Image (cartoon, rainbow, N blue to C red; front, top):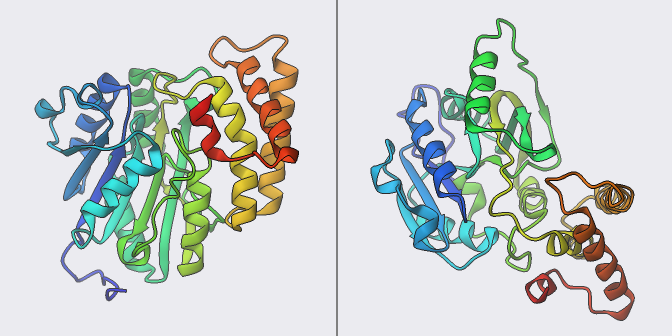
Length: 301
């Protein structure tokens, strides 16, 4: 691992990575927003699947490096990691519908400089549209501005077992040759748990409230309800066998999703395919005793 940075050292090389599919308009606005960072990224890398995913980025305020890779969040992030080898000291993964506070990168650099044994960090969610119908871009910006004006914002920093995938900061030297598990295809559900749980074996993980942002939770580009429902069972069981998810978390995820999909299938939210998710849950539970359960089976659904 490279020598830790001290506060008197020159700034680190910091890369922002965004994997995307099917959200070119939102992606463009999110990339433009990065121009407001008080400490700009040295490199912004966007990895799409087809040209339409990254349309318009040639005119963005921040000019990213743009690449195409096979579909799948893990594959796309791995494509970025391979291309970043030796080019950065911190890697920040943002979802294509995540808006960081304007001092996010500056705060991350300071946090990692002050704590040489820190290998990963995630931030505070000012608002998370993934938990509901989603947030519009203008509403997300308004939430960011309101938080910025808060005279006494939260400033807790505490240990955490795993990071939230929409905003993850990692020390590049600690990543080494570790990559996201491509056995978790498409949306890669719980890939953040798997990756960060392995990173925790190499150093400390923190949740830092000073790292703040808003997740739009846009529904466009998401995987189908049936596929996601299958992943809600298959992925935790796969990671349990792999040893990269805490057993209590795996059980809570599976029980909670199955119960929610069953109960809410009678009166589903308009923005969630509860019946499709329930069908995927049940198919996974049928596959389990048959020995057919595999995260990659979603590619057949």
